[in-house]
Length: 324
Image (tube, rainbow, N blue to C red; front, side):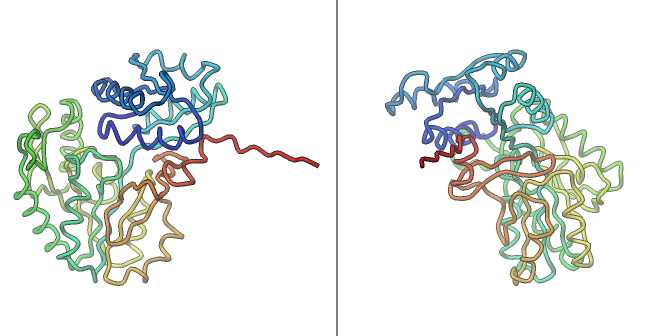
């Protein structure tokens, strides 16, 4: 499990599997081991048998031996596409079932008839939640030509209104990134995008783990910020003139975790769901996970589903019993 939502990421796996009667072994991210230990204590306080849920504080190099162990019957990973490929290969070698919830580069489409007063706060939260460190965050804003200036000005103003503050304050909505290397990687992606012709409207500076929330426009489908997952507060704006062009831009990605479509007439675009290779499509709302809804992606965003009754069955042995 990853560090960015250290409790929720595991609880949404643990709850359905404990309902099934499965035991769980957690290999959490090294920088949230305190969270991992607290969760183990919570399960014990709730009355679950000791070691039904356990945490392995081990280095990555030891993961293969755990996956290979005969007591392990399945593996679920939330993480990067690179990590997913590695775990899938190891699990496949030992014929273990896998569910992979990987990276995303969600599109946030704003059609010509969208209500911008409603859209702007949703768009801001879709990109900047958890300081942009979310796989389901909107990362590619695909905006109709007639609304680009209004959207850009509105997003820039919301960024100004929400500066980086002390994350220990209850009023804080924006902090530093989790690690310096993550901020450095995001800065490299920004610099590459600007060198390819994009324009920085606001932000764009980085010092250690401090990365100022950033908005860039003039982004095209071949640029770095469009093609790669940007894991931090960097919003990339791409314009379109025709609806077919917008649909093509959404699909111009190797990821397929989710997409948002904003319109005052969402029924007009419901047929897009038959063409989009996405795990989820939200109309007039940011993509979010909810225990009642299946969650997961396709393409480089992984496979399998968490949550809902569909996620409940992922690690169940669907057994046929016939008596004559």
